[in-house]
Length: 86
Image 1 (cartoon, helix red, strand yellow):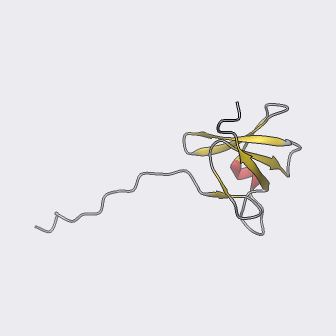
Image 2 (spheres, helix red, strand yellow):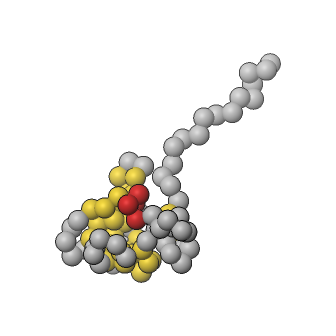
Image 3 (cartoon, helix red, strand yellow):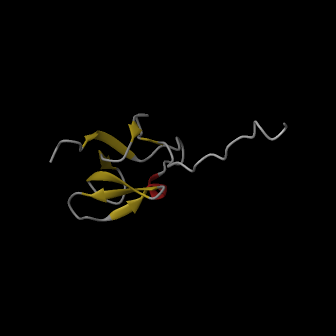
């Protein structure tokens, strides 16, 4: 009887990302990078990790390298979503 209401283990989920203006960033978002001279980037999700892929150079940077130390948000500005743009 005591084993009926056990909590189910939570599935690991990707982290919630916010830009400097507190806008949510999701897979497929188009952002302007403020680090590493990437310019405009598309956000890609691989496994449980986000990557910023530069539209001009193709360079990939992990989201962990884009964390702003003060706000703990991403050092990017959200421009839009790439859904339906191609």
